[in-house]
Image: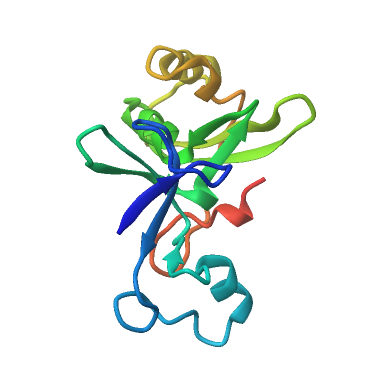
Length: 168
């Protein structure tokens, strides 16, 4: 069984973003638990067999599920959930942007602010204002980064993923 659960624990309405939950038998049709990490296992597996892998998604009226993003990659801004990946995709489509990473940073008014780090393609130029305007034409207002830095490079893990915990 698969469901999308809203923050209050109810089954999410069609199109509503929530936590993807999968029910099965731990150790048989689901993982048994995290190796030597009882706290993570307790947070992810419920007593009644529901597993919460840490993914956000939606389900439509026809029962089709859509992955939105990892829960840890979501930015909560003024009550809205923003997928960092969605913003990164828009930034990466800009002709002057070679690579981008988006994180949430504390905001005293809106919980989190959307902050983008962009690496420009060699031989190109773009201002933060130009990149922000590009995003504003392609994203809802609340998703447009309010903070942006142009950097020479982004930190990567050994497998090539951007190491977002090193960004601030």
